[in-house]
Image (cartoon, rainbow, N blue to C red; front, side):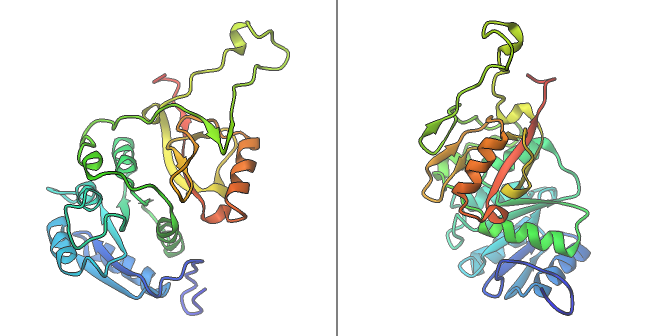
Length: 267
């Protein structure tokens, strides 16, 4: 907790250099104030994606996290994210944390950002506290880096290909259970098919500790070694959440998952 500002983070930002890319001066200043109050080492600015690329081509080895608006035009934050992940910027590590900022949660853009392995999405309005928490969570998120061609192939306007529909936690498979009191052949006992990510609504990333029972996993969940723990479409029942918290080793507040709700209108 910073005694003068009240901005709190459980993640040490003292060695973290940020690049904030947005044409709006007040937004860049707001983010810088929040980050510096939370102890960030340095914050660089860019007024467009083009300027951000110039900065990354010069200082990419020093920058640990990029924060940008996805609707800057003519080149937006998703394009910058794609450049970083696909190794188009040689001085910038492809695993550099990227947080997308937006004033409107566009579901199509969220799904594309997920396919490009965005670290976090911040939806305005945000308090300093919530902004810093979102960025800190993004910096601690674990994920498996894909090949450059996979990121380059993510469609700009349509949904990216969905992962295979396997569901298990650790070594134990999860099987659909029939409804109590119903014969197994009754129509009401037939479970709904697991939805793909593009069949979910209200998709967002949150801490495991904040996941509500019944929400649906919107993206494969992997451990630090890249092993699949749980696949997209799994219903996060209380028993599964408890097992995931066990996997998190008591760090559910810093273990992040993408979740959503079933959109029955699309299934």
